[in-house]
Length: 123
Image (cartoon, rainbow, N blue to C red; front, side, top):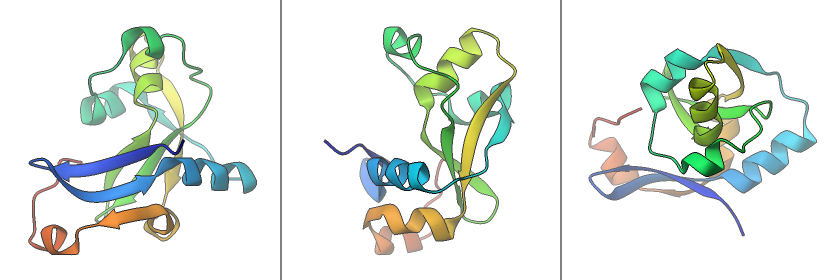
């Protein structure tokens, strides 16, 4: 079963990424890893998580961050790993940083009208 991430605003899906396909592509192509400060990521992307699941994740597996709208970033995959790293007071976590040209190939749903209205996205 495919894993997806939706970026939404007021319950309306603006963008839907196929995370499964992104991971498949990353596994086929050597991709550089950037180490991000955990506190920095947690301040931007902290979300509610299943704590038991999070504490059993492998934080050596890189998170996935998409570059969107200039210098803004969106955590696509790794919220549970980020939670574990923060809880264990680990300073840095590995991440793949995907430029727009890469991750846009994996967008399966996009509401251009809503997106272009200038809705302020929480990134």
